[in-house]
Image 1 (tube, rainbow, N blue to C red):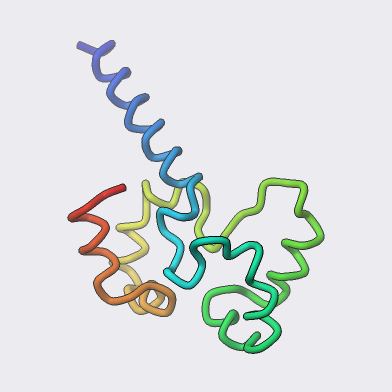
Image 2: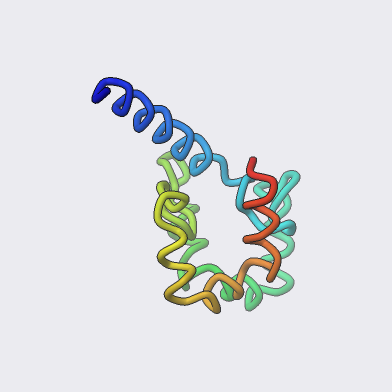
Length: 110
């Protein structure tokens, strides 16, 4: 019985990790389809809109360490604990995600 439980936990962890490592699975619509290539123009034309989700110096931090694994707005294992954060401060989620983001994702998980 313990062995089966360990296997289930390990497999669940693999699923969480693979989801969390794929930024397209939770990125806003504006950041899909080649965003890395085309974000420069958007940032130059309206940098203030970036600050709604990204901390100051996000650009510099990312561009200085492009050869390393970058941490995005969410930590790599956010799927595991996001419900706690969402319940504690749902308005923080709404600052980047559409209102129906949670229900859409939970109805049709990727």
